[in-house]
Image (tube, rainbow, N blue to C red):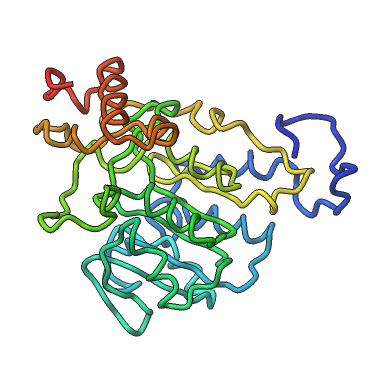
Length: 305
């Protein structure tokens, strides 16, 4: 793999002499779509996916998408990332906390770190689906991580990220099943945490790279696109992670500001968690980061950091 655009390095290497069938700069070139709107998806996801699978070619044409956020592909929801793929004959598993539809294999589930692998197994999801879309507006990182820890190896994955956070910070909401018992607390109720939802790009990067994935695209302030490393040919020029964010203002308020300090108990620094496996220390580290950043999202609860 070649790191810099415009390098004069040959499109083959001693380690991989496979002929490069795509423009070596195709990953750089896709970035022109970051703020565009595709024909079916919420933003430009389907533009990216069309190009990606022109380059690496699909294998089983199997996808998984959660949360689907609508009862069918024709409803006027936020726009399914798999809609265009479905129209091209792809099939797979759709998951959502509020909708189900047997016709398109949409099943109703709330997803957590402790149940996603069994749901995949129960629905015969192949170990290497061509595409998985993860968009839950909550504890996405932990579900993303559990899929990979269970041995599933999607060729392409998209994960929603929280653009309120700096890209080098590893902040994330906790999954409620990440506790001593590993089970869902009886009093748990899902609630959207406004601008504190989900995970930072930096936290998702730790999970992705530790499981053999590289970022190849950013869809606006919505999704990050990850490719499995064994699919990256030596002749592909891969932008550094930071390059994808050079033309966007990270930290700008996205969704409403936090009004209750209760959410602060649910945010951890994932980097600290990986090193210590200690939720209290990880929460303290997250509070220190948030206090130092002075983000608009947390202005109303800054005194509690």
